Length: 87
Image 1 (cartoon, one colour):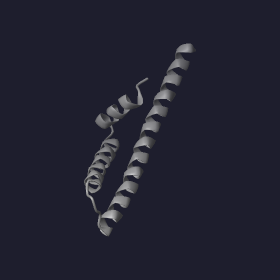
Image 2 (tube, rainbow, N blue to C red; image 1 turned 45 degrees about the horizontal axis):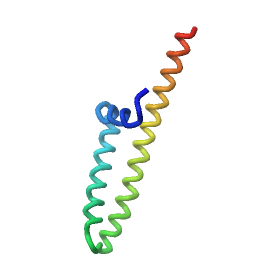
Image 3 (cartoon, rainbow, N blue to C red; image 1 turned 90 degrees about the vertical axis):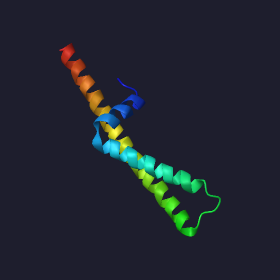
Image 4 (cartoon, rainbow, N blue to C red; image 1 turned 60 degrees about the vertical axis):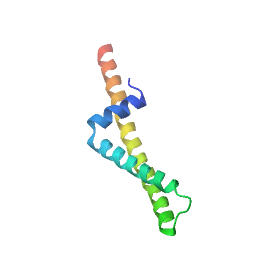
């Protein structure tokens, strides 16, 4: 059974939605780092920062949903394979 990190790496190569979510997550993270590097944020930048953080969390949640689904599918496959071998 692959680790969570191995599954993430596999999904980055095989799952188009996961790859797109990850790319967008990194894009938002880069922008947040830009904003975080400023000594002062204008009101519009503060609003942007808050919005980006919320969006980034939404993307992470969706990626975690995909990971859990794949882990559950693998566990179900392993269980059914084990059951058929035991029969």
